[in-house]
Amino acid sequence: MNTDALQAALRPHAEVLRRHALAIDADPTSLHSLLGSGEVPFRQLSGLPPEYVDDPLRVDGEPLHIRTCLARAVASETLAWGDASVVVGAHGPSMSGVLVDDLGDDEQRDRFYSVVAGTPTWTFFALTEPDRGSDAGAMTASLSGDGVGGGLLQGTKKYVGNAARASTGVLFARHRPGPLGVGVYLVDATRPGLDATPLTTLGLRGVELSEIRLRDVVVEPADVLGRHLSPTRRGLLGAVRTFTRLRPVVGALGLGVAQAAHDYVVDNRRTLRVHERASLDRFADRLHATRTMVRSAAAAADQDPTDGTLSALAKAAAITLADDLTAAAPAFFGAGSRWEHPLLDKLIRDVRGLELMEGTTTIQRLTVARGYLQGRTLDVAIS
Ligand SMILES: Cc1cc2nc3c(=O)[nH]c(=O)nc-3n(C[C@H](O)[C@H](O)[C@H](O)COP(=O)(O)OP(=O)(O)OC[C@H]3O[C@@H](n4cnc5c(N)ncnc54)[C@H](O)[C@@H]3O)c2cc1C
Image (cartoon, rainbow, N blue to C red; front, side, top):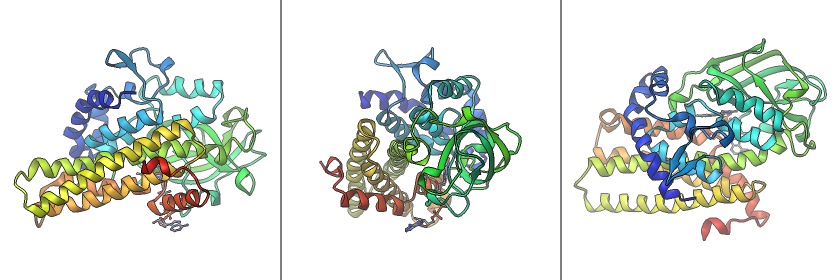
């Protein structure tokens, strides 16, 4: 894949996102005007499989389908320069699509994508629970029955992106104790007993984080994602490959935000003192190195999604850089700069959201440490 060509093709769309970024931050409902305006081809950028897109964008004459982890990482970074919250908050298959691709059978895939490819449709990926975000193994949302024959869902999911406006999505629930006791279910949001309400947030406000309450929600055997797979390849264990593919993409979002902060300083502080110039140069070097790491991790996830070490490392490195850079940027403009430069203030708040998405930096470091101790492939990131 020609990553430079992809980046160049998406840059004008990122500029449109940037023009709307502060308005959406101030009033997240204004996201809908942007999505409906036709200014950005969200449907073609959403990662639908080729067979569901008859009018793809073209780059160098070739149809553009953002399907690999590397393509998603490059696209997410480029567009996040404009507004990361819109990249995550736009309608489309989103994280659920990656899981459906990994675990769904042909019928489930078609059921999911037929809905998502039609009228603008949001999807949810409901894993996190109140007080059990990092420890997915401790989840308590439950499904009655044996996990494959259908049953009734009970429990609460929290901090789930787009859930209150979604039509369909994937939901993790436990039918028995232990790591093999968690299944993933394809659930329509209109089912009786499923109520999703938006939460108030400070960062990534376009994402509309939501809480989902489940009371006797019916799950049919046809909803069991990975029903054709063995118990070790479906459910939470099966989803590990999906997490490996998602983490470089969240890292790429952080990279886009970091680049936005860097460019903002360069564009708005033309005359720099020596130490300021040196600081910006160091950040530019880190951006370059971290981009290489994120793309290496994305390419490695495309090759072997069973090893999440590099993905975790890339996410942690990119978010740490984004945190450092967005925190340093206001100092280039003096006292009161977060007030006078609202974009810098937004970038700082958005990074805090990215820090939590797909696991905190501490959790990624634990994964990296485990991978290192097991002799996993860290050399790819360093080379
Ligand atoms: C913008 C955004 C979008 C999101 N989208 C989704 C979504 O679509 N679907 C979904 O299911 N969830 C989603 N989440 C939730 C996200 O996955 C969780 O916030 C994340 O997993 C952390 O969980 P928590 O918030 O409960 O924090 P906790 O797990 O309570 O962690 C709190 C703190 O404790 C630390 N900590 C936790 N465990 C350990 C440990 N073992 N050792 C050392 N330190 C530890 C963490 O690093 C963190 O600093 C989203 C969150 C955000 C902010």
